[in-house]
Image 1 (cartoon, rainbow, N blue to C red):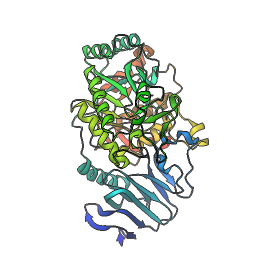
Image 2: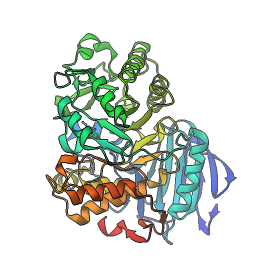
Image 3: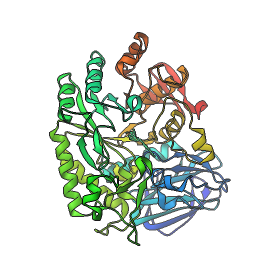
Image 4: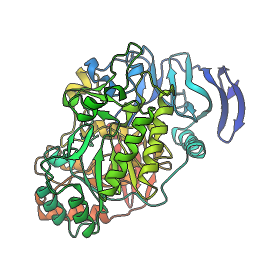
Length: 482
Ligand code: 9PG
């Protein structure tokens, strides 16, 4: 059929017109296109996975080493010979606009080659098919997704101080109390304790560096007007954890009965089978415990683990199982708790979480070239990797608070140039989510003042091009950094 003057050969689904395009119904759909080896818009599976335009002239290159694949992108497609993405995708047309296909239900994949754009899903689903500018088609797709999956955020995103990108796991009660005190006078809403407080991955009790228990930090933050925030990775555990030792049968296994690896850091870790009723009870009680300690902002991390390929007791499909587990966490947390999903399957998280990390970790350096170039891994920590993927996920802004990770104001322990620091600061402004990990004691007077001004600023933001924005009176074009 003809769409916008081009001939497309559509097969596999029933077609119906909608505002801005068409709705296609089916498990598998295929659209023959005339654009050849053009550019493909790849939408990586979870927060850290790459979202970017890639060329169909080059074959996809599997991420190295193989052990890292579960935590980089959907491992089910790690060796796929065709370019593909999660939930949605598109190819660039001759006029610079795009042929777009996006599913309205989690659990779908869109792939492209020089002849076809193909969609396949775990279930019968409806697809949005359109030809138009990136901005047009993704904004309409976002509306349709919002109608089916829901939207949660009436308020603007909170301004967050997070402990990770300065102290990493080397945090302690005394040092965090000192940080809280130093934050006086800076307009943050959330003080978030990151990785390093827990006994083990899976054993979510405070370790010896938090002798007064986690409520001590929460109380101190609260008394200073800050919402206490806590990092947790509720769906994973290390083999050395008590959780794993006591319940080896709670963990996801493959068809052969072997444990499914969820990743390699901390000497390797495994994923819970979140369809098991006993696991669901444990998840509820975990969230109620941290709520009881006073935490009202939860950064839930490594969430993809619940949706890894494997054999689930409940028999649910991967993203269905994940979404149900997320619903359980949301119910246990209560409507008043802010949930920031990290390392999270993007589409399957919408409507249930308040904030969503939309890129890999930033770092106080620009590029992670060894991993990006030689190991074909665009998910390593670096300002550049975070910028690239986050910029390609800003279309999610009407659906969820989009967190591009922290910005830096410090020069201490930082290899970023002033211009590179400014790019991350601007990225946060256009994303609508401001966070930093800079400890106040690491900032000189001028840096602290810059941080304060940035936190206070609410400039009007308008998008003027694919990567160009007006921030207040300033024209900011991110394309020169890509
Ligand atoms: C805490 C951190 C921070 C950070 C999260 C997440 O692939 N990996 O090995 C990998 C490790 C850590 C990581 C991302 C990927 O970072 O994004 O903000 O909370 O965990 O451990």
